[in-house]
Image (cartoon, rainbow, N blue to C red; front, side, top):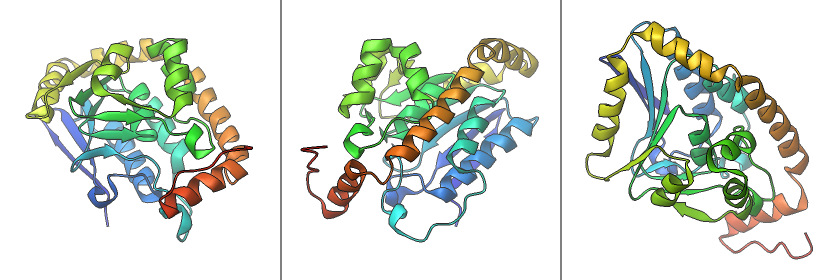
Length: 253
């Protein structure tokens, strides 16, 4: 069953993360389908702008921890393939965070050309509380957007921040009211979609040129660090605590 929906109108391709029952948490299928959506949008002459949002009440609850315990299917693209497709996407990429964003549901904001959020949205980078480390090039992008101290706190502390705090920190461009949120984002996207695609792509290419290699290097380094920490004592304790619905005990770790 498809977990990504996509439609194009007036040059704007809206892509929905559509696992509402799982709060749009990322599993292998979602990573692969979203990667394909970016690749298809890049090649589609009728797409000028891509807007990514979530179906239902969440943007994305991050990695699907429950899926990690089930049968593992070899992904076609996987996380790194998805992230490279986003970094290489040649057209304006807009995030419309309609609800909570956790893990990659938050770090993906750093990969967007513009990120908007609904007023009630909240964000969290829970990596330390899971005994792992950050991903999606956030160890590079967050420092650029938020400054070193705010980025360090957000990536290290595992604490929640509100949409207004994310806006003040520089992670978002604008916050809109919950009522009519996607319509307000679409108005912004429409401004871009009325402009010549060649100009949009050239300007984005010039802006991304000094950043792209650093972002991809961060993805590789983060992936290697995640591999070292995944399955370690702190990570096992965090996952067991999540599944058992209790507070993790990291004493001695």
